[in-house]
Image 1: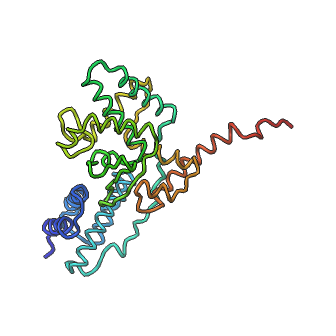
Image 2: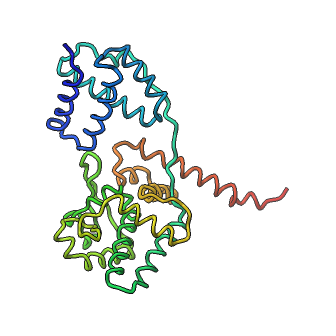
Image 3: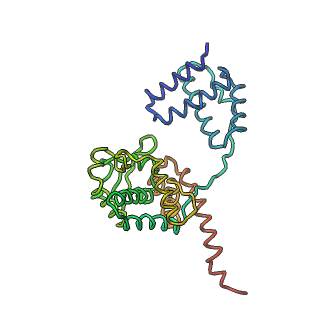
Length: 302
């Protein structure tokens, strides 16, 4: 007899021990499948899955629906592979739907300049060594976000072994532990990172992490959000800026400078160029703005 609870547990164990998926992925699978288990009351057939898909569409945003259905498909594939069920119900269910394009939010260059300038001003005017160290750390974090286009989780996870300032490189481990190496070539960024490493050498060695909080532990993603919020306020901007917007801005601005999208894909660590192509929509909107205002035809009167 099919026992949903037992099979979910077995699937999660399989994902953890045999597939070696991240804790974050397994946790998401667990939430999604237990939600389905509660909805279905232990049933697993075409009829109940269709009803659940309809429920998802009526209750969640398309991106969330897509993820939850992907979880269901992974679970179903496991059940079929282990011969727990004979027929994959998803083969007879049409669940395709159009996901609306949500353009990534970017930081205008003048706002980004103001935020970084505010941080540098605080650093230069610091009255105590403690304050100076904190501002130095904050600048180094924001400069790294923009210099590499890395995710905030990737920045917080950096270790001494991943940084090679002598060769201007940082090794980043992205989703699925995929490794990529990014060059840092801006002299201002290299200078601030060099100063940071000199000032925090002992803490970095003790913690095994590059970026440290005031408790001498690894900097958290929430702390990075607070850092950005602080200097955004000091800059006089009312814009809500998130760490991920540094990544979006990095990619969009490179596209606007005619950098090949395949290079941007590699730098960002995207598994598919389709993901990177979302930035072309933003770049095109910028193109529209430029051509509507600055096209030379605007100066011709007939």
